[in-house]
Amino acid sequence: MAKLATMTTNYLNAQIEAGAQAVMVFDTWGSVLEPSQYARYSLASMQAIVDGLQRERDGRRVPVVLFTKGAGTRLSMMAESGCDGLGVDWTTDMGEARRLTGNKVALQGNLDPSLLYASDEAIRDGVVRVLESYGQGPGHVFNLGHGIHPEIDPAKVGVMVDALHEHSPRFHTG
Image (cartoon, helix red, strand yellow):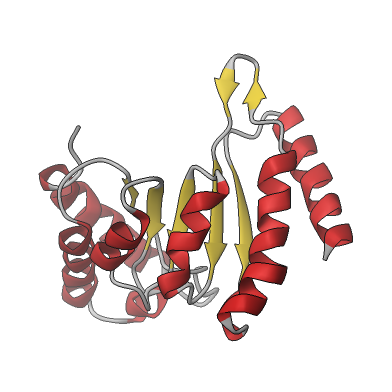
């Protein structure tokens, strides 16, 4: 894991050097570990990456976002890593994620990507549910709760984006 963390740190630093405006570390399988093993292996490796990144570039701070699929209550540990944001998948309520992290970091997510197979109305309702769950205030980057499926009709993504533009101003303030 130490070797992977070093390689990932080197890779992300090269991305920052090349002009990346933000970087994100994905851990799709960390949630299958018991909590102590997660802290020892996954989170410790992500912490090493965060600690090794060149966070300042050309007079600007480069934000670092961490994501563990299915993190749930582990979000509170992740928020202590020094990262700037956490990705939240659709299995954790955004209001609960906000409570767990105490507004220490921005939260990104968390519409279920499978919802993009549904009707336009269901997609719009899903967008509003995510916004309502996070609540009022800054610190939320709306996104899917994991990657987009390759078969998704791009028009469905358009419905999601349009719904976000329509409803986001009521929630994302300050």
